[in-house]
Length: 303
Image (cartoon, rainbow, N blue to C red; front, side, top):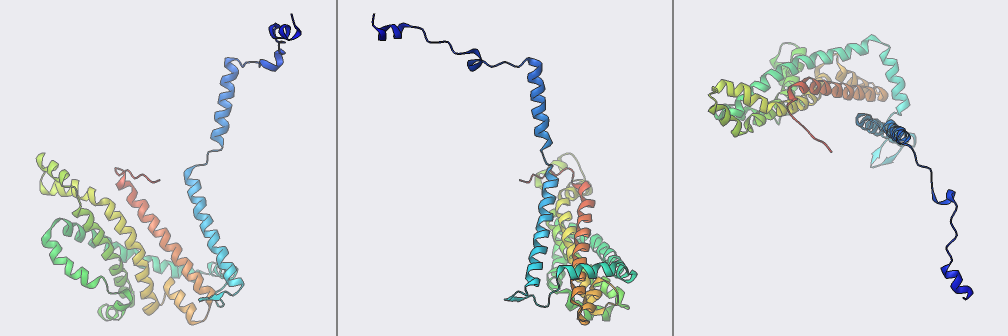
């Protein structure tokens, strides 16, 4: 037999045990390892709310950084940032104002006007909107007033409001009321009008009266639109309030901002603007927080 043939029929050398076989884990060890892996994986899961708020805060930080760069280098192309105060100067001015009681008086006066004007607008707006959404007669009656008065800006109402109302305070509240009224009316009317007809017919087949249908079917169906109108109306009411305070007020955050412009205090102008934005954001958030329990039946999915 040749050497080559003997090599073919000879059995291969057995590999060492350590090269081919690995020690197996016991059932208990596998369970422990699996639990450790799961625990380590869960530890790195960040809540969705934390991620969303981090993105929002990051957006504000980026905006402040851009603001700082534009003012630091006096950017002057299309827009002129030469007279715009830097973020550090605005922060120093804000800290100086929060140490005085007069600054909080301006804020308190504006909040009081918002509460009164917006409160009346909420009551009248929801009632009129529901009537317009479910009654053609009410819609034909109110739509003329709304379509004529709604496009008139708040500033245009100021001279007439001063003539109509006995005090400047009441005229400013009236302007605030008008600003919040129309968004609430239109959104409420839209929600009531779009009540599913199948729900109304189902209630009628069960013997429900017109009032019960209105109370248990129409109003719950219109709640999402009412909540949206209340949030939009809050923002517009701040806009209207500030227009009134700038022209005819003696107190309020709008008057504070306009007075800073008259005195050429640019840093105080930005302070007033940022405080207005913060108050508007906070008040809109409170409106959504108050209306949220009434919308528990609504399931909203967001990507």
